[in-house]
Image (cartoon, rainbow, N blue to C red; front, side):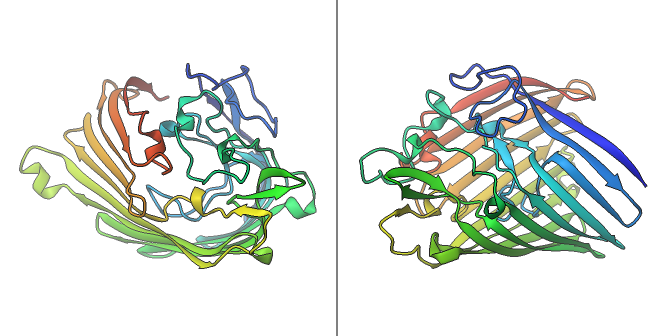
Length: 364
């Protein structure tokens, strides 16, 4: 038995307006800005042969979706620039029990912390809103969002069983506590985003055959007193690789990743004048196709393209780019990302933010 410590920091510097307000952001729960240096993981782990216990700041991530995750929404992110979303840790205690090749875990998440998202003059805030206007004529995007207070009702509990089998893997999970999806309500004459108490259950499986893989994730959320809709969410997809016929035309390999995400409402939000909007407008992957094509020209050059298409509203985005290795640790890349759709759609609200990027990426 022994105890070890892990630390990982995110360094993030951007010239966009309203991105940063200080050099270092440690644990300000209500912070809305990106720190130039931010702790991502700061934890200690006590480990024995059959189990371990981790406590501190860590990420929470599971699910098999490569392009869209329908099931794991328990962590924090920095989406100041949504083309480069960075995962951030949350305060937690996690117990993991090893059962041969499987892992049973219980995660206790007592303290809520804001994610970091575009605000004020940051151009990625977009030009529209996926929500209708509030009854007083203001926008949901103007609501000040703060973390939940620290008390027993606001603790999240997650139980996860991850299994490894020959040729396939699967997981089962259950969670109770404040929902990971926010509604809009009126509380004491003030509009606020609120995460009602909910139960989530779900599962996923992936199956590998040869160089290919297919997978699915699915979950169901039931909200106490119907303060939000009850709904199913899921993603089905696969990764398909071929290196035989591409070599006949001088290429190394072609990889295609394709996914379809769906969100199905089971029952409506309660009829209460103080419940203004359900979480549905903000839930991603309601009826959405995702695709990615990667062409590995040789050991150094990779050409890629991608597509996201929301079938309900018709908004979409495309990306086209390439990466070229200069050395084993240094690569040059460029990409262009383009958006289209109505201003009250998730991707259409960014249609004035088409962007071309050039850069160097150093890994060590």
